[in-house]
Length: 140
Image 1 (cartoon, rainbow, N blue to C red):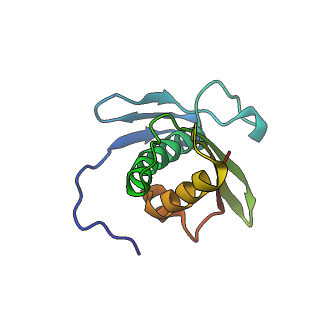
Image 2: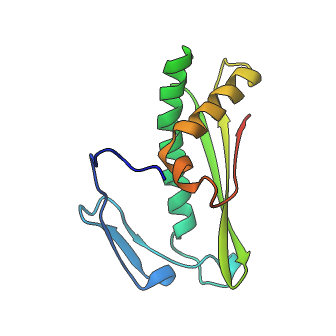
């Protein structure tokens, strides 16, 4: 288990109505209507937990990429992370899968993949999902 030595920050949010409800952080910087996607039989017209997870994971991964780049002497400041979070049936409920595609301009593909692999070791979201859901990290 990856347990933080100390907690530097705690995000707080209140959600009502589940997947077809509303979610907001305590500081109101995130304040969204939640809607089940049409692809899952819902009405659409709002964001959903998978989109929020994709943004959060992608941002966290890109931050950790900067750390891996610094470690290996590679500038990752112009990198782009495209994250995909899938949801589908798993047994009696649902499961998730993640694919992160990372582009690092002016860096060859082999070096970029090594950085992406190292980032996957460092990123808190990667640590949280490791062994729980399939996560694919790919330099493109």
